[in-house]
Length: 151
Image (cartoon, rainbow, N blue to C red; front, side, top):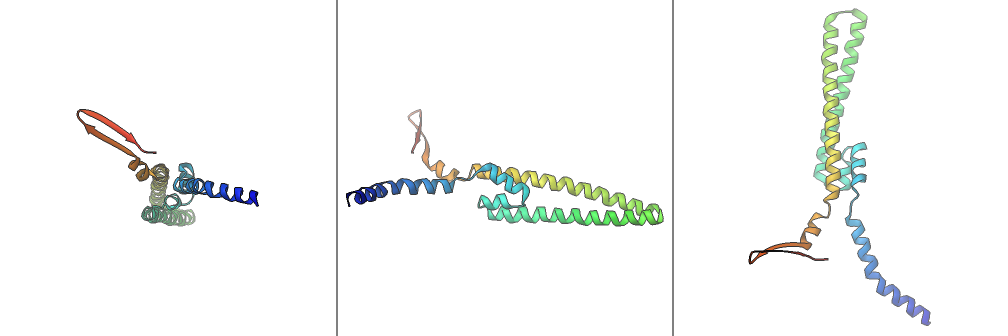
């Protein structure tokens, strides 16, 4: 019976420490995980960082760029097939127009992916910024600069 009381007392004393650690771990986001998610799945890094409006914007932008790329790729192949069958230069000219548009779409898509990955990485670093900002106080008194930090 004495062992049970001691075990119960240890659990009671350690419970606040355990609960604080769990809360702290949930509030911290991993920047590399956020960046990897955003790189491979559009908007998932922003979703991981709980930036839901950014997530929707990234999904819309990257989705539309993927759609444009696909459309221009299909049109390019259609005009190239027509050119191969007829050897008419107007089809080849259309092919080059859609080829250039497809290349342009690819560059825009790469830029959007890079920027969304960078955004997810930075957001994960700054996820608990407001909490930490409350702990730091900078005061100017009597020609002195006082920096105080609460733990």
